[in-house]
Amino acid sequence: MSSGTVPPPPPAAGSSSRRIADYEKLIEQRLEQTRRQVKWVDLAAAFAALGVGVLAYLLVAAVIDQWIVSDGLGYVGRLVLWGVLLVGVVWFLAVRVLPLALYPINPVFAAYTIEQSRPSFKNSLINLLLLRRQKRDFERDELARGMYEGLEVRTAADLAQVTPESAVDRSRVIRLGYALVILVAVCCLYLILSPKNPLTSFRRVVWPWADVSAPTRVEIRNVQPGDVAAYQGDTLVVSAEVRGLAEGEAAML
Image (cartoon, rainbow, N blue to C red; front, side):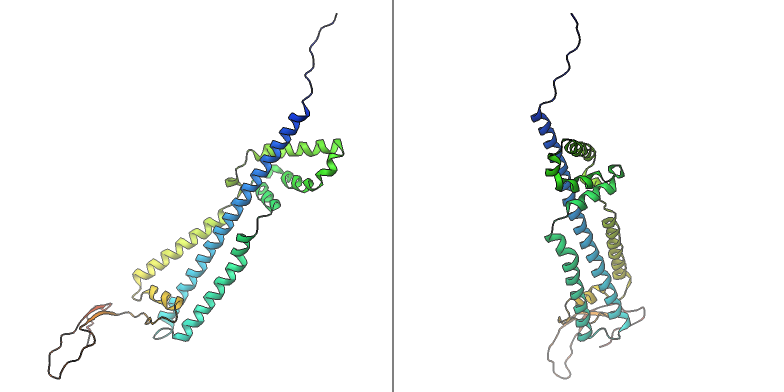
């Protein structure tokens, strides 16, 4: 009489199918999360680039309005700058922002994004997505099906170690954010140090049809008593708030 260990029974087909289904679900979940992350990161980068471009354009327009053109830009000049700004913004939105908002991110591109962050994948995720198109042909061949399922299991195990937040590169958004912060700081310094208010020039370019006078070094506000009539010989007290006078400079009526 001989004795020995009884080999374990082979795994049930249903159990193996459930594991494969779980692996497929994990892969689809990671790809979908990465696609959303790529879209939001690209949209954030696009809007940051738009903000940098618009602010830089307005800053250059303010310099032209205040220091290059004497007495400030006229209506035609402001209208031309407004038209260029409008065309540029509309073109950027149509070419860069609208496609991102309307169309989904390709799963193969999402797989490429993941593999760029983890070179250890060695194109296994992209290969799996490309081979998935021929999955029905693999089901007829037991050897091919086993190789495909092995690739799926290994890819799912690698994907379990990757989060979508770490897979998507955000360096471009960060650089554009820094550029936007620097431009805002330059505008603030300009507002503090310059005798002419850049916000006035911004408004003159953005709303060229508005009745906004060109910014000057000296500002006269709150003139009292305003538009009144007086008889010759009467005493009329005139007051105003004057800003920007140089040292020793006096306001004259």
